[in-house]
Image (cartoon, rainbow, N blue to C red):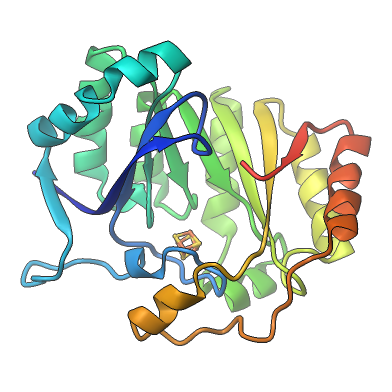
Length: 250
Ligand code: SF4
């Protein structure tokens, strides 16, 4: 079994605790307007001879082991991101098992849009989930990401039922995710869960625009301005005033 990987980043510090190796896996079932990794969205196929990297578990473990000294000293590990890592469930399952065997901390950065069976089969294998939460209203979710959030909300509940450690990642996108209604809905949902360690609020920035040009992908965010510091702080305060542990960035 080969994993199709778009990139591997070393020394990452925002994808879970400590210093980490982040593996960006190819393919995502969503197409968020603001995606920072649009090159990761397209699913690979057998005759795809693009620049994607292909690793078997043994080869990827070799890459992971090169970083062990930094991971051990910093309490870090390896994060599988994307794209959506659960779109390659067999490979992800095998690499998570291999990491567990060597006591390497693992995090899965997921959109949550995965079938219940696949999700349930992977829940126990990772130490931490970085879980994206965007829009609670289903029609708006569909509009801005191209898919319903029904499964996403269901799978988040599964993580709570199983008391898995979760860090929520919420992009703050002006006019799309930052409305008072959406923030209130997110707070209401998260207040009912007991397994959320932190909520990373990720303010929109236009850093990825060049990638859209490079990969010839239409960029829908041209007219979107970044949020002011005051607005970001105001949103963060809504979370903390509700007793939730929120931070900006992450
Ligand atoms: S879920 Fe993440 S990787 Fe997938 S399209 Fe949205 S922002 Fe991009």
